[in-house]
Length: 178
Image 1 (cartoon, rainbow, N blue to C red):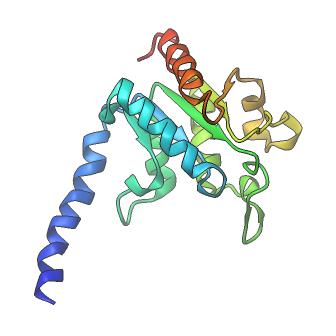
Image 2 (tube, rainbow, N blue to C red):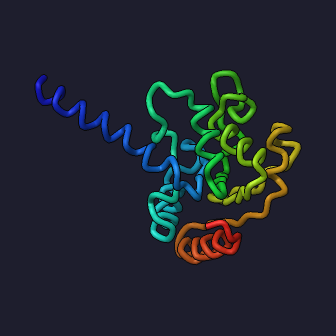
């Protein structure tokens, strides 16, 4: 028991420190569905961090502090970023929640992230993985329909992964926001 108690303050301070370090410098926000593309998104994140630096890339709801309204926190982080990379896998549209398709739920993390970015009119770059196709506007909630008109690219598995990531990184750099 004493070991667990001694580890708790260290873990708690690490949790508090991570969002603070990211709070003023996020440039690239990665939006994705864990059930759909967690593995490839991890690889994409690693390459973006390698190029732009860890403090300039935000990924995952794990960075949201305990007790904070995740909708407000996500809107705040997206409000500070320069662009959003929306990783879209083959099940991105169909992932189900308790009351149906998650994307139709106003509290869905992915929906909140992309809605916030579209509302700010910042670049939202669709990155299609796993052979996914770009979602059609009519397949999206009205607040996300503009996503279907954003130019993006596919990131394929090896042997093409690094070449596709080089194209993505060059394209993000060409936006002049990073």
